[in-house]
Length: 125
Length: 108
Image (cartoon, rainbow over all chains, first blue to last red; front, side, top):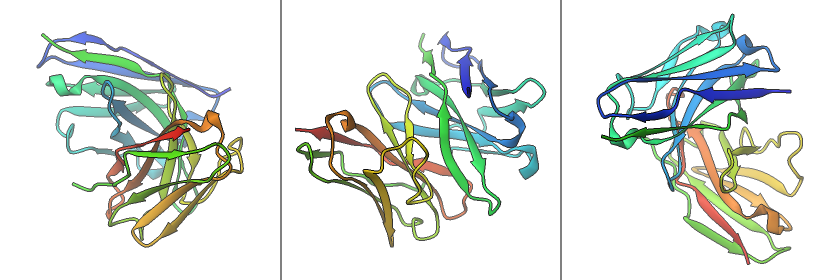
């Protein structure tokens, strides 16, 4: 059974840092890109960024709203994806979801077919 | 920055057909994806690559694309389909992804 479990959320003051983890099981983690999506209270989904699989270079892409502050990394040996969040702002308050994404042989995404349950990050003084 | 535009709400009676649109300039060259989200739950992928349906998703869910607009169609809407629906796609470079603002589907 595929499972994605986020951890590391909580209350943090503006300007501080927090690292989220996404622990995966039930599939070959290294074959998948891993993405982070957030949802502020009562708002819609916002794409945060993703990290490609090693087969596609293991490179990262980020939304403009977090670029330069957030960093996504992965440890394929442990099947964990990370979201390092620095210089946090009140507007970063949201539930953060991790998702998996498979790219087919033509290089097209097959969509986020599994999501974690989400972890709440609250940025407040 | 790139944006996808969805109607805030759509309402239909049970058994009718619901159509939810999503517009974006890069949609002619980028695939679209659709997610269903019910209150308190994580989103669920219902359509990928414009019109493909993941296993386990009912056949009443379908997707189509025409120019700068993609459409999620739910035929024979059921009460359980009441949810928020989000489209997703990439910008013209393919490196930055975005979600539409979401459409609340109400089953009357």
